[in-house]
Length: 425
Image (cartoon, rainbow, N blue to C red; front, side, top):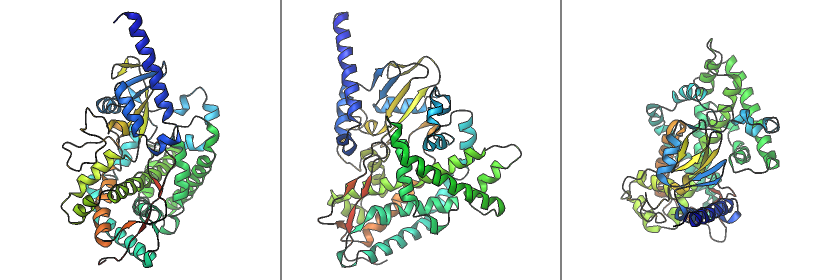
């Protein structure tokens, strides 16, 4: 190939890559991004979009980028337009959390939070999760008497994880339900935002959540309890000042949001999979299909988190052969990596028997999701008990299931079901 022909080919690839990434912003892709991912895979595993932006969607490339210490998180405080960004609480509050912190602050704060999400403490929550699941199933049975439709997302998928994370944090039970609408609005800030004006609802929700935790922090300072808020207050008030007040409130807001949004979507996406595959439902109900394998394939097949991004902290960074200059950003498409045909055979097929199934849905490396094991435990507890309790569980007829109009956090707003006659509680 002549040099001029190679240049034409590169130009066409660049144009096609930009068109496909632009397509991800459309309503069609937010409903179903996987056809776009397929087209991106045909172009390569990582692609430049312009001199300051790139995208990676191959499994090995995304995995490597997530683990590369030379790639960190975007810090709004170092942005030339910070004065404008600082007007939006949804950006500045989360910017104080481990979601956006880079070393050394990230390691300092993450170590404090990791003390709560240990494997031992997570597994120790199993009995309490079982009790919560059964109580929610009781409520679903009551609400669904006479085959009345029940919204699974509202009645179960949200209430289970929010109950668990709020119990860990120390949020009173009477306050928990308010966070569904607030969390939904706050999560706008996690989407691909090109117009800051859309952050109005996210800013309002973030301020309400921040103020709520500021009040709760004050109460725990006066009367400490055996909960995460009290433990973090103790760290913030220690002589070494290992946690600033802004970091305390930012991380409490993040833990609340991350503690239920991902698991809520995992539960809803998983149930939708089962409704489309009766034989799989029967296998799970009969305990012939390992629920852990099912949960892992749900995470791969329809990831609750579809993408994240990184910034090059140094020069000389490459991802899949694509240069990422210092200060440039790279979009990491987790959902596409989970559908990379070079890593997963027939990626559009839902297969609970996949060997070495390790999706990137919870990330990897330094920012690997702290609550990943807890989310898996909640889902692995919920699905068998749900199917055993409701042998006639089915989609509600004549009532549409509605996808959330989001790309980054992929799930359902509503998933109406009928529970039929229930088995023993």
